[in-house]
Image (cartoon, rainbow, N blue to C red; front, side, top):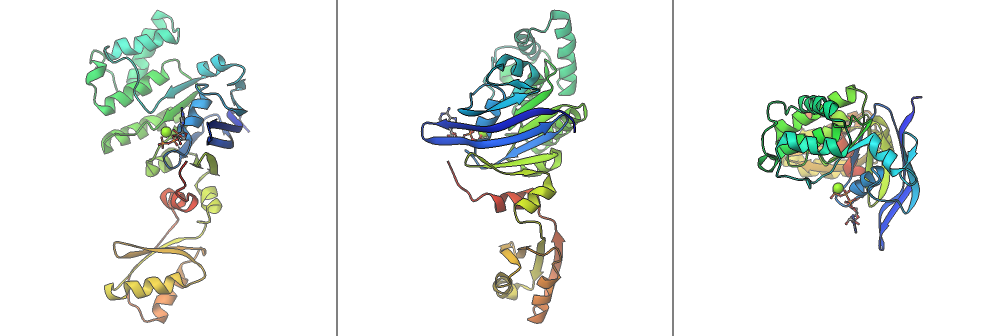
Length: 312
Ligand SMILES: Nc1ncnc2c1ncn2[C@@H]1O[C@H](COP(=O)(O)OP(=O)(O)OP(=O)(O)O)[C@@H](O)[C@H]1O
Ligand SMILES: [Mg+2]
């Protein structure tokens, strides 16, 4: 087993009477990408800020490559790059000046800094735009620049808080490609997002948080098992006039966990790996089936199943 880059050990954080992060533990190994998802207010940002030593746990500890956020926050910070959800940095600079400013903060010597800035611009596709002013950048380019800044000191761990927020579909795809490229360079990555298909695509592991707790954690197969979606999703379309009858029949079956009508297609979540019993029920009642398909539940279905919409 490779070494754990991140070890989160029973961490809790409260704000007055609110428990923002509640006894969360997890380990992340070198080269892994962890996708962190959860409803608004679930505690993702608070957890990420604690990982980066920017907020202190009330109890528990977090170690980054063995360094504790409690006893060695400066050691922790040198090992990771944090991309915050909001661009709160100086804007009255051009891209080169901005990166140089942060390079100075990271104490990268001048010669190495120039070289490193060129490299991070290349990685984030900013090469050739070095003299563009930060304050005029589009959201997409701002996010690239934030990511470039995060990479400057070549950290082992990248902590990206909603890097895709506000991006158009093309910029999102490009960001996905960059994150995957960074993972293939061996970086360990924690990324939070509300864009579940992206998280499904780029993560080796996914953590689902709700109301401060880590409710599920694992790869997609483990999440399916943990959320009770180890069975199948059956998508069935019957002739229009029979849709509501079919829905009532399906809801009455013991192996059907849920059945919802999405634009005329019944999406049935079942306990059984084989969805033929759904088809059989329709045929038994002489309901004409127009379309029938089976799917393993995707992350969105797992998410909907495992979170109850609790808010903090
Ligand atoms: N500095 C703070 N003071 C008081 N409450 C806070 C503070 N920071 C966060 N909270 C509260 O802690 C809870 C968790 O917030 P957090 O920002 O970690 O959630 P999140 O999962 O990142 O949500 P989102 O998806 O909206 O970004 C929320 O109820 C939030 O209001
Ligand atoms: Mg957040």
